[in-house]
Length: 161
Picture 1: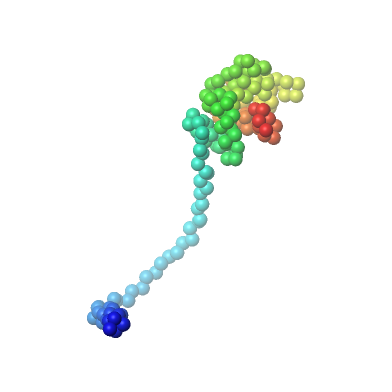
Picture 2: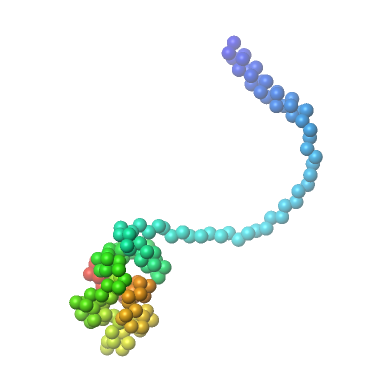
């Protein structure tokens, strides 16, 4: 009995919409023209989020990315920023030689002082800064640190492997 009831319900459900469709008014045929313009494909690359261990460093890591630091180096850079300056851009360590170390990454004055090979200073020669005092500007300090990172093929300037 259940088998016949299911068959009847299936037959009715198919027949009822068909029967009502015959009674429904038919739509008037219309012609629609659509203009398809090829629009340029726009892709945007969203850099990965920066997860700073120290909240004080998060903004400096974003700036570091803007000045050219690679995302893979940001965790180590944060370690350097925290160890060297506690992420404070105005820190000066006068105990270091050559006029001390300056700013976020504690760039030593050696790199912006005249030398036998660079009469105006290494960082001046490469157009990173004008004087050692420029190292207190976070953008310049991070650019200088990147130049030293590139010069030494890594973190040697900060005694890291």
